[in-house]
Length: 626
Image (cartoon, rainbow, N blue to C red; front, side, top):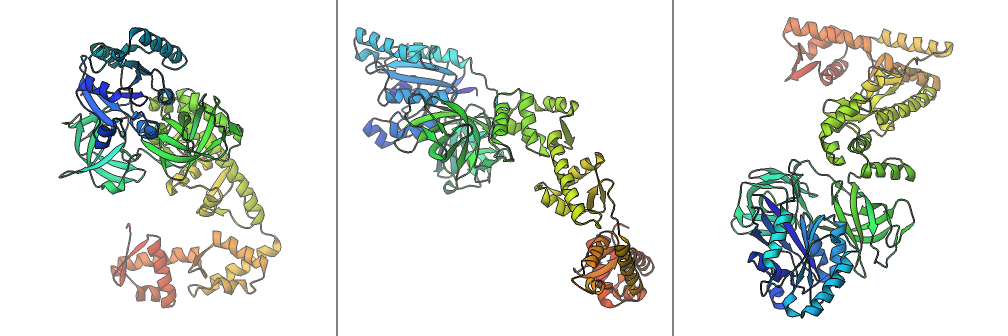
């Protein structure tokens, strides 16, 4: 089913709901209060078949200022805007506000409908029409067609349907191949079915039994049923008004503003960055940390606004901003939004999300602005490269999704061929980010070698902490492998050191080293403790030597028992011999073979267990991997 979404907009009592009923036969006022008061309070939905074969879904949104938030919830995913202006009154305050909002939301196709033309004389109608054209010439609607109608008499309705049909044929969905995303504008329960959500599927497609996720709550759900225009269907596509029957979630867990999407395709942020345009007709000057209401998709969230290149934003100005929210915000790059003041309530501007990932690097303000300009207006390759810099070892698909670029694979290939990015399986790393980490690593190693001249190097875990590297273990291994390939750092066991560095013992410290090695060797499997070797806890020289030997010659058990690496290897050989001759390794046999105590024999076997060399089975052990 090929569908488009047409959204109405306009001042209260200008005939939007009556017009939709004339076009579709549906009364979108569903609440008793709406019928009684004659105004639309909540979102209304209707549909009709156009001559071109497409189904037009109409979102009838409220016109009263108090219900603009409902209008914004319904504006998400609109393909064509139908601005309704009563010929009896002309352009009114909510007309202007709705038109501004549609402009901020990036609506490209629109039609202006003059209603109630049969309720006035021709002279007044012509006057209103000219005034309307003069106003529209200052807006994005300057080239929009104008159709004169009267829904009661039927005048102009056939002509309006023809124009809508022509415009519908020009709507081409370009987001069908992306992961599914549906901002929820209604949540309710249907007896016998359970939780149902509705909204416009703005990206991707949804099929029966798809496993999706509710954001930002991160609730996994399964699609039990799909309905489009009151018809059960097996699949819904981008651009269609859709109702989803979901299992795995209750009505109390979700609300308007939540998003149902492909699992793992979205991430919440508390600080998206955006390009913002302040309204020309607002009186509000937006200062740093001013609170405003953000309308994004179907969500309404209070945010603090941080201008990035000025102290305040005056009416009509445009700039990059950071939006700070106390609750999670779900967005993708390119999403449109509107900002309204808390009191007095008015639309103060709108814009587009530039970066929804919320990454924070130690950039200067000038660097932040330069990067945002690239992310916002750069070429597709420049945008992808900018996001790759900030997502070290990010999954290729996830980085491309954050950058919102098309044909990412070809762009990755180009960047790779130019040496700008490196691939690690299905993950990506930018060369500048890697080099920055290498420079920081070399500075850390210089400081570490100066502070601990007798140690071979810094333990990997400690280096990871000093680098503030929050990636997973495998990603840190990739980083170490790359840095070693530069021949500027080296690795010995689990320690990292600067290439060419080697501990140098003075004559005095060398003598202490030989004494310690001799003491440990003579004790054999009657293992010594660190305290036995220190003699005097305040002896800094002996402490330095012991710390160095713990990296090269010794293993520390239970935080204090010294195990020479050479003796440990011999003990492993003994374990192998016992396993082959006795069929298993028993603690008593192992103890007797090493001529040591039960305590030390058990410590050695437990060390072998933790290393994966042996495995305990009851009171015995067997070799692992042999």
